[in-house]
Image 1 (cartoon, rainbow, N blue to C red):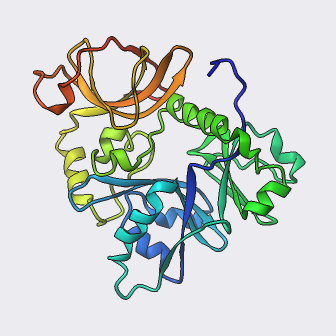
Image 2: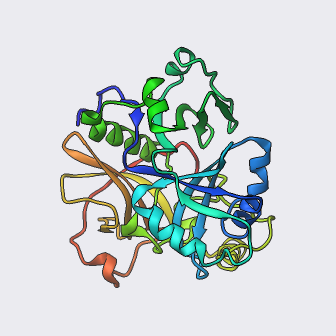
Length: 303
């Protein structure tokens, strides 16, 4: 893929929406995810992690206060296992968890140029706007990219459907933009591998340390307050190779880690990888490969 190719907007086939409906939807999520879901009442979007009781991230969600219920954007491959895990905690709560399917699809828009023609103004900051069946929110407050959610047919009618034949390019550009924004994602290959701070969620406003208890909170809080963050998310350029999500890394500077996201750019790859802050002794399964020379790339926030 040419690095200078203009980014393409359109429906993001690799992502789906999990919807939470019912009078207890917000309070149920408050006890399950890392961010304070009471902030959804301010008509804003939120980044949040859903973690195991051991503090390992099972899914990353972008939560939107959709009129039909809280909409959680996450990889389509994680919707079924995440719904299954969350339903175990419903008990007596009046909440329904379902796959949004075609009723709620998600598109990605690079820049706000396409919004006025659809009759929608660009929301500011982390605000969420909904009009005529279309919901809009900047991706984690980044005004250069927007989530666009709605019924698949409505998205297509308003120019956000995208050409199915270009789905691969649309996904490529979106995942590359995530990498350059330092915005991690969790897939099946990395489910239950990382603690939230390893993914820089504390630097991305993805964790509330004052909201109270939620699943995995004890480990996440202890990691933060005891200064035990030994791994962080970094952006790198890697040479040609078989690089993919979940792949172990052994860098020539002695650090080891694991790839979180990888996209081919030119003859190499741009990746987000969780790495040790200090050089490893070479022990463990992450050091099985020969050391690779990686070029560090900047992130839009300080690690």
